[in-house]
Image (cartoon, rainbow, N blue to C red; front, side, top):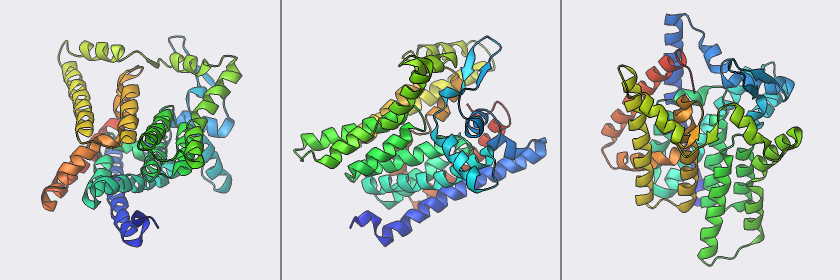
Length: 374
């Protein structure tokens, strides 16, 4: 029996899930208070704006909806991967919930599941306190409110975290299935498949036998993402048509050139210079954290996964306000901080996490009610 699946470990995992729930509950409470004070509808902010509307439309009517933007671009719902809409439709089939509320339910379940998987990774590498702090820090990131929205982030991270844990425990078929589902959730799901491949390479180089289960996992891992991309290609008559769909949305991979120009444009005067400096600081912090992950000798699958998530987030063009949200799946970046906090007095660690949670709650409420999620 896996010792990390024993009863004591499960009880400890629930402390991490409870901590996650407490931080997210604080965020929702502050959002509710802010919305009431400003005449906004917190429920609508969480379930009926931005990408959640696109997911809900797919859930209710299927694909093939397009919207012509003011600048003439034709925006297609095929940019959105199908697992979340499928789940919204499934929930709606067995309950009175509409797609938006079904999406909230999916995120409400997926968030704690993600926290559980994340805790097991932290516990596996560094012990209970590091796992607990990893979960709490992830819940308290500035854009943590997205984890409670009818968006696909919580669902994706739940699948990714459990897939990465399965790789660490050499459960290849389980990891492959989870990676495939992650690939049906977001394009960055291919990072999960790459992590599994990296784990398989490590095992092979160590001289371990390449068995049927490992090969099955390797083959299963990319199927979700590849199947959806090929489906879009078949509908549009071109194998790489999904890239055209993303290009219409302004998304593409340019090595970070457009992002760099965006930052420079925000260094030219007051008060936009604050945004530019904030972007520089945030990007530098992410790069420092990844370097700390490398120095800390994190397992290669985690480094591969995090590196690809970061590359796609920071080196793509598109709406630049999305960068913080696109980095949400890169939770291993928080491991060095979690490990450092696990070595200080518990009271000091709690104080740091509490301050971060409160800051995240306030920022999330004002951000969601202002410019909105990226």
